[in-house]
Length: 258
Image 1 (cartoon, one colour):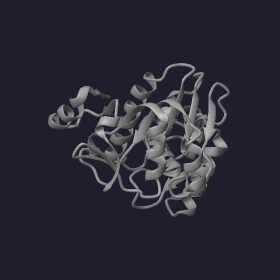
Image 2: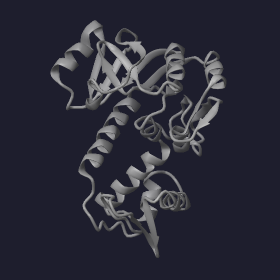
Image 3: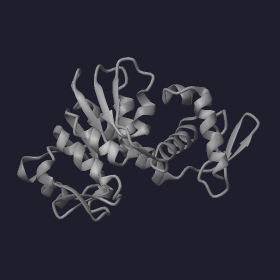
Image 4: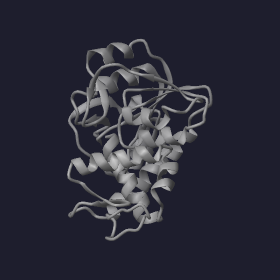
């Protein structure tokens, strides 16, 4: 998940905002060497071709990027729009966090963006996501509790009995929960190995905020994480249907459209 998220941000930022690698590194709060290592990893996966002074996305990608930030092909508009929607959700989510509180950030593509918004804030973050960790690992203001477990490389998360056991020792004020769908008044997911972690973290938090953009109604997934009665607040996006918004507000739940 970390690699997918950063690949999207690199492509979008360089192609649409005409930034250099230095500017990109500053905006993502990582070093230039980190950005260049990411480019190398993407090249190894066949997604990039390194060239003198920068890199070019492999044929079939939707934008070319260089150290000057110049785009040689049009960017994937849907991907860029999705990133902007997630950034909007992340800003709203961060506004719900109080200083000196303890929060849980689930795995997902939006939670690392929340962590980025929270940099410099005196808070404690509990997470099983290495993508979240990467955003705040060098931030002295943020205390981090990283759940142990087995590394799930394709999603950059920690799973398994060690992670599940650690959750029993945790207590948080607020959890930001990701999902793959909201169906029939249930929050669902499609990753069996992650579901026990998510359920345990929900139980560990005083309140749960569901991150569910418009594409999550109904979305996909057959594993029930919880029913909507366990959700206190839902953050969604402007494309969510009126019927879904109405149903989400039932039971006194707060719904925020980012």
